[in-house]
Length: 233
Image 1: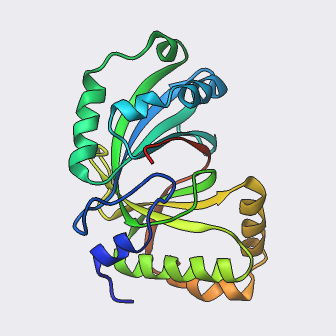
Image 2 (image 1 turned 90 degrees about the vertical axis):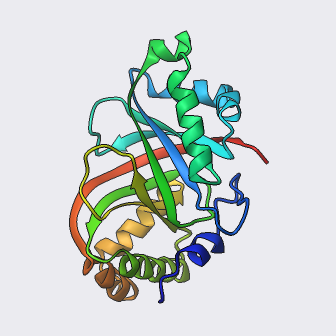
């Protein structure tokens, strides 16, 4: 697979809300990590107040709570998709200068903020997700292998997609780090996929081996329960 960034990015996008202004745009997601004393209440607040995302000019947005692999207790984050980096950065400055609502302040505190550029897009909505952060020696080869594995999973009955992101402005981190998400929507779907990998199904061995050949280290491995709460369209 020859790696050409713009066609890869524009081939398929986050269809439940994200659009592209022109062929030179690279979608960027803004993430606000929080620590919450009540994950259900934090999620419910964002579900009930989608105007938060609209006020920031997001194309779509939602919330995830970490259910396995926590870096800290009560780990959760809100995400907002934008058509390009300029829109994401502008929204982040607006957010940083705006006071938090007392309701949110009572159940959560901001831990950090991050950006991610979409370098392998996806079409499935947010749901039950496996998240990795990995250091690779060849990003193009990893994306090619991940795309090949995605097709193999789908051809073998697994309704999943792989999204790959490049971190931007995430503080101290290792070079060549990628953020990878396997979108399964429902936990049962993710479970069936993991079972096939644990059973070393023949169809997965070649593309999975190609992916592993590019991986230098695994920096993060979590399961997230996510929901999209806002779409501009």
